[in-house]
Length: 259
Image (tube, rainbow, N blue to C red; front, top):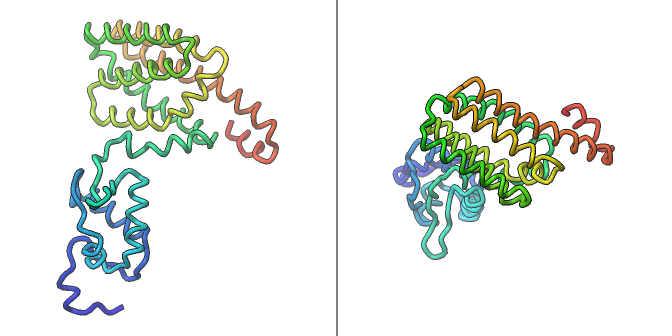
């Protein structure tokens, strides 16, 4: 497609495409601009008519791209006010991944692998940095866990609070972001494992060992306590998944190999 000279002169950093009506390419271009800091949280995109002219694409394709970015919580479309880049907060951006973990058994097991790597490293970093004030907060979280032992949802919140506090104690912004993402992605798996027989009580016992290791400022003991905790929950989950797959022969062989 030959682009008239007068149109080329009006191009902005949004760029143009060789083919029109490619909503995935439009979305990818906007995402790249966000990565490159050309668009920042809170920025307003040009009006639809102007933006479609800048990118030389049809307005229907542009609308489709913006709707997709809106579902990803990257773009917020405000009725009568236009499209804006969201705050790009971690919890928002990974929100829909929780749905994946609610339906995909492979993903839940992969999440445990990720948690063992990330959380073991975080707690090892946190242990020598624990203050007396941190100890008080950790023990308060532990008390909440015990009080919530008969309420799965309340226990889930207390569990997340404890793990988040450990990440905060580690005092590493990148690690904290990882933890925020993992917590958001793992809500479905936590709800699933929280209903398993004995998991809550086992987790409370594990939490006690974790807190004791942190109080002792012992990185190795803290790491081992965290890994032991995650492995205990994972073992319970694998048993349930294996039982469930025995009733689903069509899916069984592939996932049994994963188990």
